[in-house]
Image 1 (cartoon, rainbow, N blue to C red):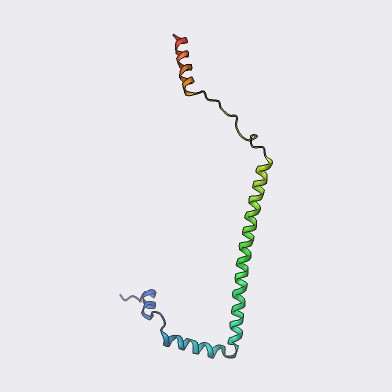
Image 2 (cartoon, helix red, strand yellow):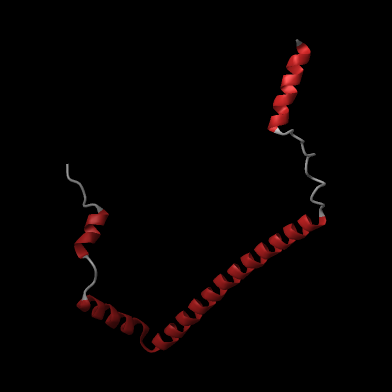
Length: 110
């Protein structure tokens, strides 16, 4: 049974393009685009700039929303009294006093 060559192995046979292959690609590009090449380059540059502006706009929106969330949570914490939400504190006796209390309870039980 014969098997076809794995696509990865097939591409590995070609390797990276060398100097002559790059020259051929450039010549084909000049033949295809010809006089429109400066216009194509200009449009490509404009599209890259617009893409970067869009990414920056998204980052600015994220930063503004994060600051808004922080400011609303900070103001909400300032408005609420700090002791209003806390459970009442438990008073624990001094460990030495605790031992004395246990000793007294033991004596009173006897």
